[in-house]
Image 1: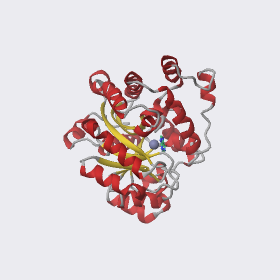
Image 2: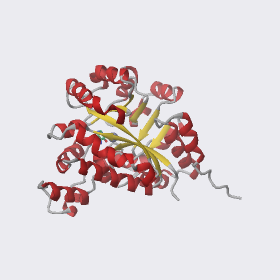
Image 3: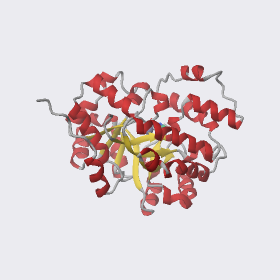
Length: 329
Ligand code: HPA
Ligand code: ZN
């Protein structure tokens, strides 16, 4: 039985498996520049974040209708449930779709169909987090938030993703202030490829409650002390970091050092179709590469519920479902 866990850093577009991409391409009459799934998989060799993003955005061409977004989310939820996920906070990138002429309503309503039945069908509760593409303008982010207004009942928070370096959090000060005034929760990718100062800025300028990645936090001891003191959760994505070459190998991943420093770490999959595994696979990978104990894994699973945007009562209920580690006599 996999450990019950929450997944807090998951781009729904990054769950598009090659098989579904080809199925949707055929359904929508979209021509993919790959002969088959095998050839597409061979393209999954990345040098950095941007080389991944190029493929990630281009494959989205197959996502056109509510049915497509529903199928995408349904496939993710089934896989996640099989790996012990009980709660998923799911990112989506509306600008990557509106730029192609797919309205935000198609995206949200399509995803919403799968999310609405997720608890009954898969035992997975869900939240949706709207991400702004940080390599687009602040005006575009503001327009996106405006376009999302009719769907805010389905949206829990806002996030910030895409190409990080050169696009510091402060660029989005105003849109986060508006999001805050609308009662939305706030997260942002920071310190994946960008410097630790981006993490500090995300906290100070955007007022984020949780940092996505935060991988480079250890480079700044003052920042570490603050993250520990304020119990700011970090949503780490180990397999993603290796695939995008943010770390050289899994054995060099700072997760263990971050846990030892007292940081509130969680383990997530980011874009599992592209990075070689879903969240349970990430747990398995760090267990063996970093020699994590069963207790370490249990702490990570518990952290995922603590860091989730769930009410106190729901958290308590979820925690009671996390099995205690087996004692060896
Ligand atoms: N980083 C930044 N933006 C993204 C990512 C990521 O890992 N995945 C999808 N958009
Ligand atoms: Zn991410």
